Length: 250
Image (cartoon, rainbow, N blue to C red):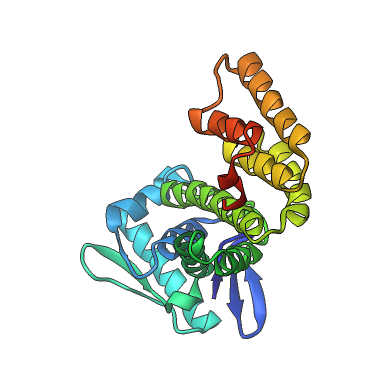
């Protein structure tokens, strides 16, 4: 199994092999994030740029791919690199890459957040439990790997948001409020976390604190960026002031 949601590792015969930065690792990371898809020769060659320009040629790419194939045989697990035109493809079972399992749970959380918040929250928490740190932590990657790292960070925040949203819908305001306070401190520009915090505080009977969150966001946006909060965020504040009945169903 390839583990990308933290230090890039391979689970082999019960042992965990942590991979270090190298040209071979950059190529393997690109193949893993695009598992079961063809990655062109030009794209893989580009992954090597910035490492050693002298190595960027078709022969060196073939050498690195050969070494990756040797690694895969040594690690076991059935993963292999094949060469359908016009590039290379890492053939691996869907369960063999933690990114794929994370994405499956995240889709489940998204699809059920309104219809079945209990199921949604459980899926989001399962997705988050797969994380062991930053994606590909500590590695210097090429373009494909770096873009995947950015998308994975965004997906992780989405999973966190879905988890707390489901908790609020499940009546777990008291449980989720401390987590939300930590989130708004860590991500001060993430408006949705502030919105969820306002809602959780209101539903927990702490309306004054909910409005204080709104004022703090307004003050920070005005001072730092010279802008106002989004209409949706302001609408949530208006609903809280009016004790809107819909707030009990969100």
